[in-house]
Length: 120
Image (cartoon, rainbow, N blue to C red; front, top):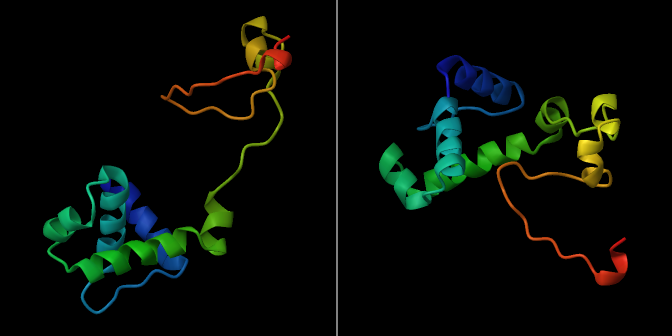
């Protein structure tokens, strides 16, 4: 992540209520959260990486998670897609198979089973 993007994220989280604690800065809170979410190695690896206790890592993670899911942050930064389909997609027969699709998972394949009576 570019440094300016990280700093902007920290700034926005601070505006929504994130603060430094006695031993952990707001920047370190965010770094711990991102490290756990991105790499998924678990808390013990994060303890070693940041030289913090299990309790501190857990509190930092839950603190940032709470801010991100709070109404001030969530309503400002999370925008759900609208239901309008762009004309270029709607008029292209190449995309007809997806006409009633609700969502897509990027980079993943999902098994789907259609009942015989639903096939037409």
